[in-house]
Amino acid sequence: MDEIVVRHAQDRDLDAITALYNHFVEETAVTFDIGSFAVEARRPWFEQFKTSGPHQLFVAEIAGRLAGYAGTMSHRKKAAYATTVETTIYVDPAFPRAGAGRALYERLFEAMASEDVHSVLAGTTLPNPASVAFHMALGFTVIGTFHAVGRKFGRFHDVLWLEKHLP
Image (cartoon, rainbow, N blue to C red; front, top):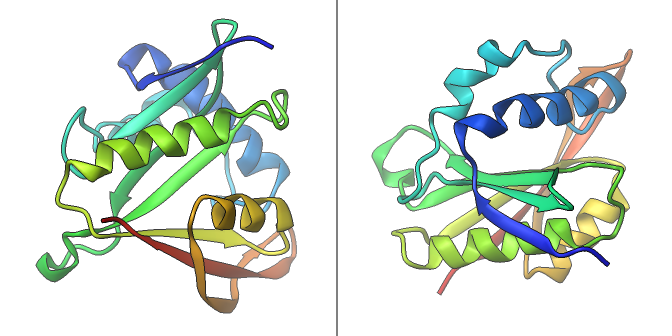
């Protein structure tokens, strides 16, 4: 098995990150974006991430190829929410069960441990038993379901929310 290399995302990764995200936009309901993005249209999203602080983005590479990415973003803009972040994680379907998702989240949580972050939230479109099991295996607990909150591909989808508290 090839080694998984996890590192902070760099500008040179934006093309591959955008291509991976567009796959999920076009083929799945795991994101509620309904149209694919040009690389430059994703730049403002990409630029919110730093190499320190509560909003970081990591990429995983296997055999020199982007296998996935994970990051943390603001949950809400109000100051009282500053210690709560929301995660984003996408793993290339070409690397099923290769460990990239786990490696990304482990590195992300390691980075968050030295930041002023208390709560990590994750939303997953249902049904997605693999995502739910993945998050729960990494210490998340279910906090509730928002029912029929996103419409994509002609139907409404529920979103399950999970949380993890950091020490």
